Length: 193
Image (tube, rainbow, N blue to C red; front, side, top):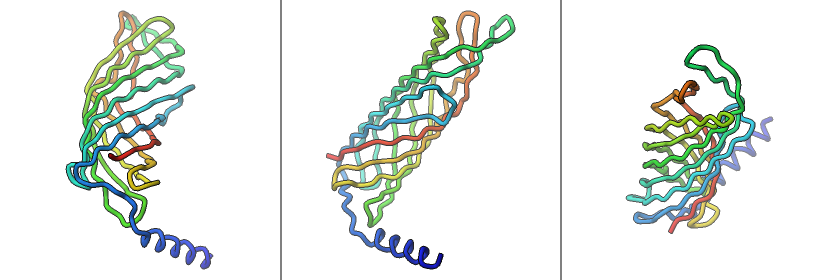
């Protein structure tokens, strides 16, 4: 056990002592493309996020994102006249958000970051032909880590917590209760220029 502890400590010292290959400069632009999945019981779960950001300082990035997600799951639908039933549900969401991210400088290839976003999303549920829609305000926070594979390219890993202001889907005679909060994991690539 002691040998493993010494070996782990030695690896940590070497990793922290490695000179940074990160090349973020004030005025750089960054394009990110990431795939995400939600922490939920879905039969299928697909999401993608494309963002463009500008570094106002080497640590602070601001920009915008476009997101798309589609989920398929078994859900319970309540009828306004009473009663409920289960449906195979397909949910499709588009969103546009503005974001700000703070990057913590390190002397290694790994660079942790935190951030927040604010925007709008538009979602549609398909309940075997009966479509429900909702549009609403969303905000959230995220934490992640970027690994510089070269001076201007990273692989990133991220956790996101999202809040939506609308938790009910309204249709002619049905409504679906939904969570206001969503938890997502994301993995992707970014390029600085």
